[in-house]
Image (tube, rainbow, N blue to C red; front, side, top):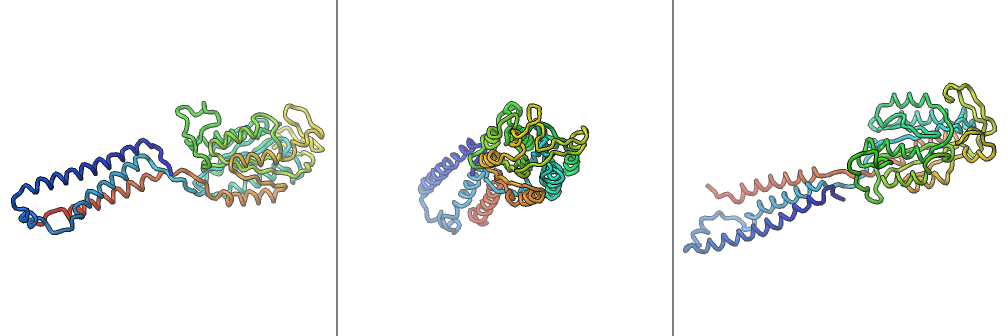
Length: 360
């Protein structure tokens, strides 16, 4: 448990001061009472009640003030919230290697179908965003509960050269920062104003990134550096390595090639970053870099999954909500002490009317 405004807890110092003032006032009244010549007459006139009862209203008011002081500090609890109250950023690889036909009809088509089913099966309250990446990363659909725009974007994916895994992760973090003010953008200068407070070690943002790729990083920010940036912001990344370890001929449709017509790269050698076509030296870029993806998952607190065919990918995405069914979130609970304080004040009024008023 923590508080957002710890300085507000200084208001609790009023409580012991009031106790001292209350005790002093009671002793002063006793000294004044004994000046009367007939103490027995005073006792006879006073209502018959236990001595402790006259202190109850003050004690209840004091407790209510203490609770209001705690509420002013805005206490928070780390709670597990359902994924339906969260955001999922889907980062989808659309590099040229996604044309590999080792997963029929090719990796990109199989990934599109699996992701489409995943989107349709999510809770209606879950916000989903889409980041696509090849040689660079771009936010295609900002996090939203509207499914039509997201599904339409999945229909028009086109491939490109290069695989910028690190850039895709940072772009996903930026998308999350737009919907969660407690997550800083990857570039601190982007957000403007004061930087969000540091996230406590071991705690996570409720938003997550699901990163699907079939290759290795070939350009831009290194995945290890991007993973560190995500971890500092409490954003968990769940990488999925897609495709077999024996990529087949590269064949994409005209639409997947952006209208360039059918192309076949043959022999598992699509364009790689920097231009040109790699032979055997390029084959490492056609297979998911499991070592790096596992490292990303470990650093950010996520989990790595492998899927070597369409069915395997569908199963991974189907089971993913069970893995991330809940996410830890800092939830403000100021309303609880405020409600208790209100009840105590009502109790103080009742006790004062019941036990301290003189009978008529």
